[in-house]
Image (cartoon, rainbow, N blue to C red):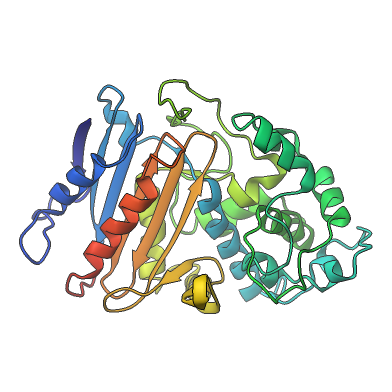
Amino acid sequence: MSATAVDLAPDEAEDRTADGTPVRDLLERAVTEVRAPDVVLAVSRAGRRTLVGGGSAPPRAAREEARYELGSLSKTFTVLLLAELARDGVLGLDDPLAAHLPDLPLPHPYARRITLRHLATHTSGLPRVPRDLVAGAVLRPYTNSYARYDTGRLLRAFAQTRTRHAPGSRWHYSNLGIALLGPAMEHATGTDYGTLLAGRVLAPLGLDSTTTGPGGGLAAVGYRTDGRTPLPPTDMAAFTAAGGVRSTPADLLRYAEAHLWPGGTASEAALRDVQVPQLRRGLGHRNTHTLTWYHHPAPGGPLLFHAGATFGQQTFLGFHPATGTAVAGCATRHDRGCRIVKTAYALLYRLCGEPRVTP
């Protein structure tokens, strides 16, 4: 497996851990643990960035600059947008979803009790996906049924769905729930989701290589489990808010850095809001969840992270406020053997044990 390193802060001394190990060496070793045609791991410490690319495909420098499909990592962008709109008084986090979908008939009583906060925190009681997507996902795992799912169909599916439990009573991951934030925010602002995200989040944070569509530049190509059969780009259609954002490794680090040091950014209040713990979840309720990030204990303070996947790509982004550390990972393969999420998480946790750094 090949590996190439890029220091994104070439004018400074090489970034090293407390025991003198170059961070680049850690990344080069970690890249070899990931099984995918293209792999990129990137670290930011005190704003100093180091990026390493590799993979089973022939060496190609462009993999470090490619735009990757973020899958469910897109949810963090959507909920940051929601928090921004809430800070501006455009809507409220505890508004009923039904208030922003006023013409939609909702025969099931619990549906009218679902709030925007419930959707953001996966406590709405809604299933992971609408029922009419389940069969296709099982029988045709590499066929993208989302591409034919327009907003009208999404809203009809919601209206016909009976919640699994009372809103706010349990945590249950739901792509359907996050997808519904898209039309809710569109109704509140009169602006489409892509334009909203670009104007209220991406541009203010300087995320020039992050988009909700193919965009310009080089697009990473996902592969089937065999690592050889390429897959077409993933069109998430009405589920774009839940999984349709694309970004480069450098932009992901920039996005994480905004969370690490929100002071002075255009979205300072919202960046802080999305990091506040909201509930406990997992086995024995040992893990915390914020408005959008998973929140795990780590040396010196919690680390926050989210992962995502499409049909042929996987991503990870996590950060540790106590040490000013962020790790991003991207891979062009989606299966249990890929290991990008496990590897990137372990790398972040390893760096959490380093002394505190400041920008």
